[in-house]
Image (cartoon, helix red, strand yellow):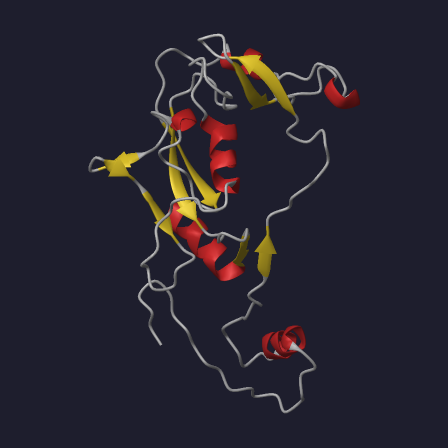
Length: 208
C-alpha cells in the first residue's frame, strides 16, 4: 500500500513457530535467510522531562527599558557554579565565538522535534525561509495535512538553544552566537512529546 511518503507492506510468516510478542516475531522473521527484507519494531519515543528545581532555573533581569523580566539561566555556556555546579564546566561558547570568521557561509540546522514556533521573537532572523515563508515539514500527520508549528514547546526550546538571536538585548542567546544560523522546523514528535521511530527516521532522511 502506497501512502505517498511511505510504503506499507504486509508479510506472511514463513516460520511456523508462534511468536510470544512483536519483538519475538521480528526476531523470527529476521533470522530466516529466505527473508531478504529485515524488519524493525516501530518504537515510540518520548521527550525526557525533569522537575529538578535547578534545571533551567529562572533568574530576574532587567530588559532594555529597565523593567524586571524572568529568563532562564544558561549555565551550559557560562557556568559560575549555580546550584552547586562546577565553575567553568560549560561550552566555553564565548571563546568559540571568537574563532568565527566575519565572512562565513550560512549554517542550516534542521531541528527534528515537536516543531518550532517560527514567529517567536527570540528566533527573529533565524528561521530558514523559502519563497518568502518559513520552511519545514510535519511527519506526525501521515496524510501530510499537518503543519510544523510547535504545539508542545520542546522544539522551540531546542531551536532557541541552538540559534536564539545573539546580542539583541532580549531573552537568551543560542549556542551558535554570532554565527549566521537558519533553522528548518521538522516536526516528528506530537503535542504530547512523543513520536514513533517511523516518523523520526522519515524526518531524518528528509532533512538530509
